[in-house]
Image 1 (spheres, rainbow, N blue to C red):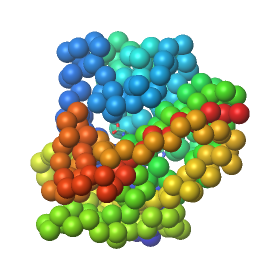
Image 2 (cartoon, protein in one colour):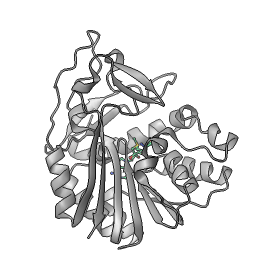
Image 3 (cartoon, helix red, strand yellow):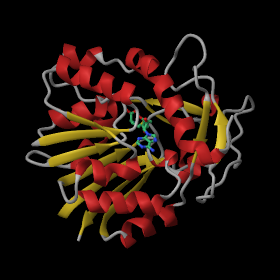
Image 4 (cartoon, helix red, strand yellow):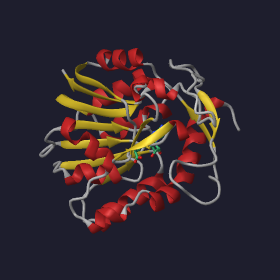
Length: 276
Ligand SMILES: C[S@@+](CC[C@H](N)C(=O)[O-])C[C@H]1O[C@@H](n2cnc3c(N)ncnc32)[C@H](O)[C@@H]1O
């Protein structure tokens, strides 16, 4: 694979190569079958998210739009999804059209989101579940979020916990071992993953990825320095994918926790903040 400085093109090829597998594996037919269906990710968020009716919402790194459509169904005034993968946005657009939802999709790198969407256009920035780990600099991310929000607007992020992302890949002995950086490091960490996180035949056409971790202190400081006031910060024992193989169990509702003593691990967190 190339130098990790090529992180963006490496990750873009990888995300483009996952789209067809995710369109098959995300159970998108549930949206058509039930006009009230909400993705399991947004169901988890719903009580913490509160009432979003009447808000202009942007979903950053929206992928194939299942959570974006769910936000639309929660009654937002407008919903915009942004992602750097055009194939993902094509799938998201098709999902929205099939379900009669008016959602705007914009293809842009996260760091170019202000140029693509404008300043202070949104009441709510929603993001997470595998979003920050693709971005090399959490301070620049927080500045983008703050610039997109109107004064009084809110950030809502539920994300994999940096402790989870510092852990090893699944091991046959089920040991959970710290293997990767917890803190943000220049260049990130290169991985090769032949499979994505839904079941699929064959290997990914573009298995190389470059991931970036950010410690909790780095995330919280970035949010504060960007001019956002912390409203709540909650750590969860579960995460909505199986990150550790047999060391994790499905706790129901598509959430996974450590099989033994789940209270050992903060697997994800929800952070809510407000622009001053
Ligand atoms: C795990 S998905 C997150 C979405 C959501 N959890 C889901 O499963 O639908 C990560 C998304 O981030 C996008 N992404 C990665 N790096 C990006 C970047 N630099 N700018 C914009 N989008 C990016 C990918 O294309 C992908 O759609």
